[in-house]
Image 1: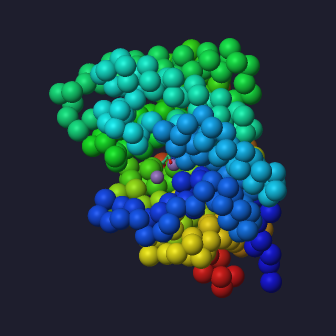
Image 2: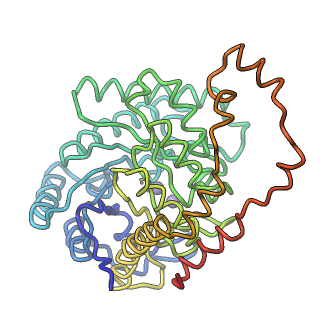
Amino acid sequence: MSDYTPKPEHKFTFGLWTVGNVGRDPFGHPVRDPKSPAELVHLLAEVGAYGVNFHDNDLIPIDATPAEAEAIKREFRKALETTGLKVPMATTNLFSDPIFKDGAFTSNDPRVRAYALQKTMRAIDLGVEFGAQVYVFWGGREGTESDATKDPVTAIQRIREALNFLCEYVRDQKYDLKFALEAKPNEPRGDIYFATTGHMLAFIETLDHPEMVGVNPEVAHEHMAGLNFLHGVAQAWEAGKLFHIDLNDQYAGRYDQDFRFGSRDIKAAFFLVKFLEDVGYAGSRHFDAHAYRTEDYEGVKDFARGCMRTYLILKEKAAQWNADPEIRALLAEINADDGSLAPYLGPYTPQKAAALRDLPIDRQAIGRRGLLYERLDQLTIEILLGIR
Ligand code: DIG
Ligand code: MN
Ligand code: MN
């Protein structure tokens, strides 16, 4: 029997807001009593997590007095020391308080934009204080219900100005911190700017310090946009910009469900885990998800354990897939290359172009070739179904 026990080297993390989710939804009141940050750290330690992340106000309520804030931080730090949990990532809540009802960095009100910068600088200080080295920006309210309200170019320029300012703040403070931008196409706004990871990757290159900024793709968010999550993650990785990742699951065409990892599209989850393990992704495996509203806190622990167990089971199946002799033979045949075309491919030269123009290629014979993909995918399914 394999061991699917989570260990620190797996780098499984959860936000305080995930296991601390009290089950409120647009149509229902909370179903679970709130737990303190310290209690949530102990819950995560009990299920075997490596780390815990937070928004500023997950840890310190927005109206806490300085004395209350210090007491909360003391308790939280004590829980971290007792359990050994780390804080790899932090972020700012720029979406709950009414002041952000029309966005934070993109608000038409300069007072809101100023407050968002102030709040984020303080939240960055708080995250660094607890050891965070990745800082996530999810612009949940940076969007519109009507495009009569804001020029999208102005919105883009305001976000760029804010991120440039905050990159300079981090450099000024000499923090060892990098930014990870998280995309989502909609909810809570009708439409959110920079809707997908691809939008974020393009935007990062327009910043003053693009080397400080990467992405934090989330499964549910790319699925909401009808996209292949692995492809977005692979593009981020290939660009050296996969600074963090939010793992969960999602039925297409629905609100942001933030389901337990692997609970909906197990095949997509398999190929994602295979990719992360194959390329040696060294970052957090962060589960930005929450338990069904039907659950009590024992159910919340089941949810957290399930996220990690499914990841480890899929990690084992990825190794099995890589080692499967029939799959290896199929891949060798599919990717057969006798090297005879190497002189015609790769970087351009005028000689290569001339030779390529005259190269005889039997288009019809090649078009008739069967590619063995049905057999390859069926073997994949049979590994996932556990019969290989
Ligand atoms: C939602 O998917 C967002 C917020 O929970 C948070 O800002 C970010 C951190 O993972 N994900
Ligand atoms: Mn989400
Ligand atoms: Mn997220």
